[in-house]
Length: 222
Image 1 (cartoon, rainbow, N blue to C red):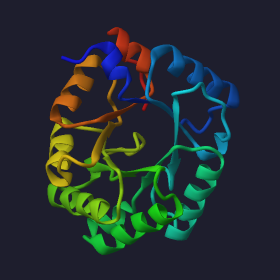
Image 2 (spheres, rainbow, N blue to C red):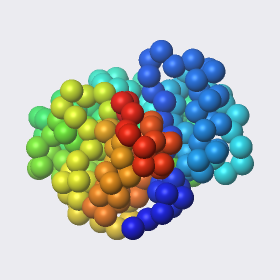
Image 3 (cartoon, one colour):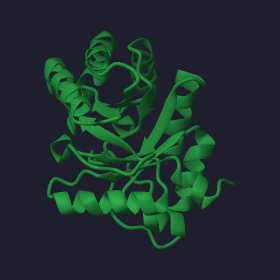
């Protein structure tokens, strides 16, 4: 089993509430540094932020609906990188996935990839709880084809739910060993984190990181 410190190094310590303030983000960064998480994940309007050496900054794009024009997502991603983002977590058009328009999903991802090229890390949020298994496979293949670095389960805001072990395992099987898989949405306990890692997750999106790492009662949130 991974240690709490090892789990922390997989966590994007997340604050995406619409009512979040700059003081809240400052507190998030301080807590991330204390806990030893991999990154903080924030909304684009919170940039720029100052973080200690070694702590990465992830920023969401097209969040949370994914129903933005690809040109808008690309502009948002480029602006975030210009303002200091190391990683971009973009939301696909879930409706396109439901209609099995995987070429359109791929083009959407590719537009953001072009606007935020390597070394920026691109994670693709597929909202797995809203998709059938074949749709999960289709959009994960689109992410691979478009040059993404990660596929990610969820925004944490969709009523269908968040990450499941089954979705993570299917995503890992689809993308193979070379892409990252991020489990996010409802990962609130150490046991859940361990299960996601065992299923193939290489990153975790967590808002209640302190409670998860300490084994305390989980807190509500992302």
